[in-house]
Image 1 (tube, rainbow, N blue to C red):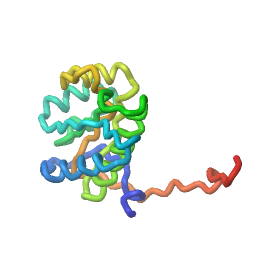
Image 2: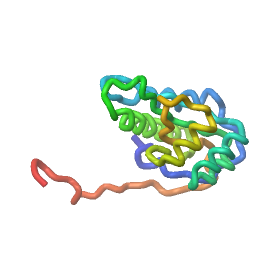
Image 3: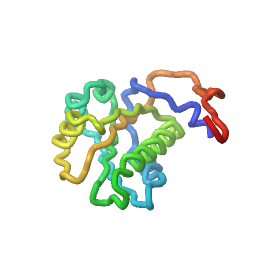
Image 4: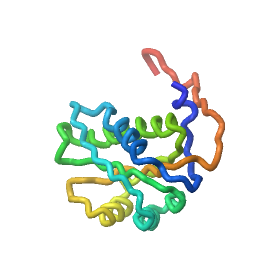
Length: 166
């Protein structure tokens, strides 16, 4: 799968809107990620209002690229949907990875902006979107057409593989 190697953190975007149907395909990829006990403890907020993107930027210290993105997706974990305590984090991470791969596959770019477990970021995002107490913002993905090019990536390191023993 080429997107495993071509997906890169993209922080510069062209001034082109991202079609809603593509955004929904990206979220569909996230919803098809594996989750503990098939609990699917996630929710997704599509953000395409510039003032909300500005507010996220104010709440997240490493998110200046949101000021130039046309769309972002906020991935949240819903504790009320958990079957196995604490696994929502892994589940949401798997959803984010699927989404990043779909974003690359669709010719778009993004960067994983971590929110959880930073309390200040969680509180800031929670306030912007009026999230209920059981919903925890996990990450934000800006989505746009790349205005930068990065080479393919291959981080394979043979010495990090161990067989049957360390």
